[in-house]
Image (cartoon, rainbow, N blue to C red; front, top):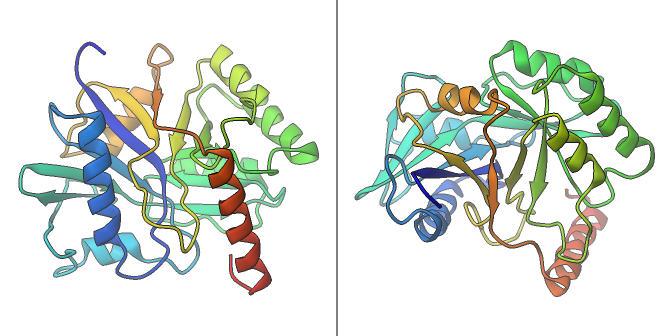
Amino acid sequence: MSGSVTPVDWHVHAHRPGEMGAVLDSAAAAFARVNPRPASVLGVLMLTEMPGATAFAELAAPGGEPAGWSVRATEEDVSVVASRGSDEIVVIGGFQVTSAERLEVLALGTRVRPEDGQPAERVIAEVAGHGALAVLPWGVGKWLGARGAAVADLVKRLPPRAVFLGDNAARPVFWPEPAVFRVAAEQGIAVLPGTDTLPGAPPAAGAFGGLVPGAVDPRRPREALRRVLMDPAVSVTPYGSLASPLGFVRDQAMLRLRRLGGRR
C-alpha cells in the first residue's frame, strides 16, 4: 500500500464493565501489525454499545483510564484518545439498536442513543441528524428473506451515503459475499468491517476492520472519518480474516447457549 492509512474497527463491543483495558490492549497489538508506522494515530475503535453498556462513559470519566493507559479528551464530546507510550488509539462512541424490521443499525459517532423498535429509515435519519454515521451490519441469518429485502431497498432508495453497510469477522470464509455489497459498491457506498465480538468471547478489537486512506485528525476524528466516507471516490480496504469453519461453529454454539440461558 502506498501512502499512509489508518485502520478502523467499525463494530466494537465491550460487553462487561471494566473491559476497555483488554479491548485497548487487543487493538494496540492488532493495529501495530496492520499499521506499523502510523502517520498519526495507531488506529480507531468505533464503539457500538448495547443497551446498558457504559464503556465510553467509563473511559471518558475522570480517573477512568484502564491500567497502563492514559486518556485525553478531543474537541468532540464523542471521542477520546487513549495513549500507552507512543501508541495512540482513538475511541469513538456509538450504539447498536434494533429496528422495527428486526434489523441491526449501528449509530457511529453519537452520544444520543436512538430508541429500539423504530422503523430503520427513521433510525437512519435520526443518526444523520446528530452528524453520525448509520450502518446496517451483516449478521448470520439477519439478511435473509424479508430482512434482506429491506436492507437492499434502503440501500437503493436512500440518498447516497445516507447509510453504509457493515461486514464482520463472524462471517465464515465459506459464506458468499452478500449480493447487496455489490449494489453498495455500484453506488459508491463503503462497506465498513468490524470485529463484532460475542459476549464471553476473548477481546479481538482491531483484528478485523477497514483501512481508511490518510491520517485521522486526533482532534476531531469523527468529523475526519465522516468527511472521508462522504467522498464516493474513497474506498475502505478490508483487512483481517473471516471466521474459519471451526470458529464459526464454535461461535454459533456459544451464542445459542447464551440465548438458552436468557442472555444475548
